[in-house]
Length: 205
Image 1 (tube, rainbow, N blue to C red):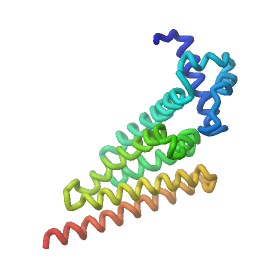
Image 2 (image 1 turned 120 degrees about the vertical axis):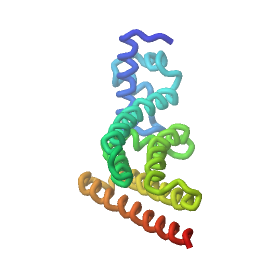
Image 3 (image 1 turned 60 degrees about the vertical axis):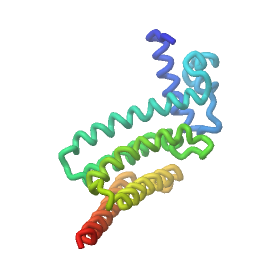
Image 4 (image 1 turned 90 degrees about the horizontal axis):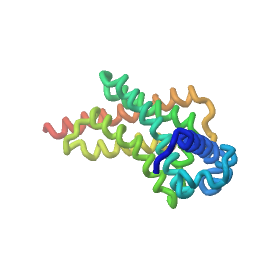
């Protein structure tokens, strides 16, 4: 379907309104009618751009995550010449700040399992770069395979545990949280590096 500039403008407005709707009402109570009202367009207007609520939410997922991709790639580029541990911390901290600034992203990330078609897509957006950076820290040799898997799991579990705390409003001090987050993340990596040295020494016996 071809869109003129006016149509593209309406689609953009619908996506922005969809973010507000998602933040205010969540997934289960998401209403295309309210989204249309927020944009001051007819109730039929959203269906010109999206077949149904699910298609709008998928478009919304891409809209939000495209912003994360831009930020993530900028961080990786800035820290490309630094130690992998520093690069990993920078990416994870940037992700945490992004989540704090984008509650609708958290809403999709923490959807009920019945809605994981959306949530699963988002979870991979952080898992992929985390896994790559961890493999820069721990050599991708067979003897380290289990350690890499455990470390990646620990980092991701820590990130999503923090996400749940943000969603439940257990976290309010952003700067304090970011500092603590970085400290714990570095501790996880330090433990992994110690275990890596143990595995290396044992394999050399």
